[in-house]
Length: 342
Image (cartoon, rainbow, N blue to C red; front, side):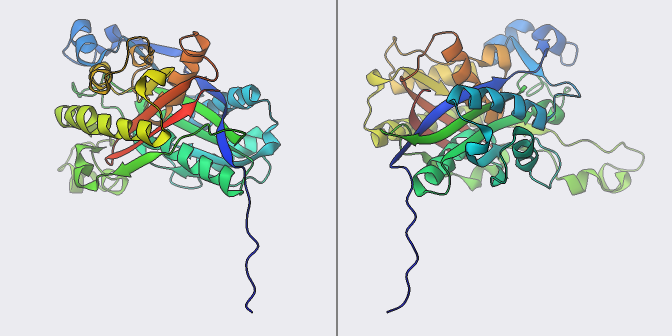
């Protein structure tokens, strides 16, 4: 008889035990954006719902913002950093290819030799990380997993691009996922559509950007820094129609109906998208909806945990409530789930 591998046992269920966020100190109101593009405060608010956003200063690095957010999440979870058995960082704006920024964050937090790695799933990054963390806890490879969504999108913003200059913000959000006596994270409904990869993308690859200027932009022209571009109307239609269906699938997978929700926390991409999704989902008016984008802008992977923290702090949602979360963005990628709020 051939030898068999010893089975690995983990927790039967998992949940979010703590959440924390970090918002940069510098506030960029619409009035400042108007110095860069020909627009108006009314146009920006109508188009996106954004009144202001936060941009990181030189000392507010991806690592620093992550450490600050994670410290709050760990404290709320009531655990010690050394109990964390995995650190997952979702980001598209850590500009150093290697090593993963997660390793620095884990070391600074005091997580010992916990495995640490980055994932690139844009605005769905937090949802992807949550799905991985849930599997790690229930699969027995970690008791607690730290999931961080962090972005410095100001580094990838072209302030002369009228269609995107007003959208993006910086910040970090973190969550501690650990064992639970009851299901606290529903099935993560996630996926991708690479046929629409160019709908939201970086303008050019780094090797192209740093090639000789005359080979890229023509003789005598300055090499252009890569920035984010997107086809707004295409993204709007996809987010409203296709992502509403994904959100419905997440509700069905969790065995939850919309009227049982204590909060709806979608990715903070655009206020019009949020409003349209609320309508498509036929959410009852008593279900509070995260609208953090008005003060924070679109922070990609950080937007859901940042909005979650703010709703809890303001009493718009409370611990133990069921929340439907959904992230969607470049790739195109998406992830949705019903979770119990910490």
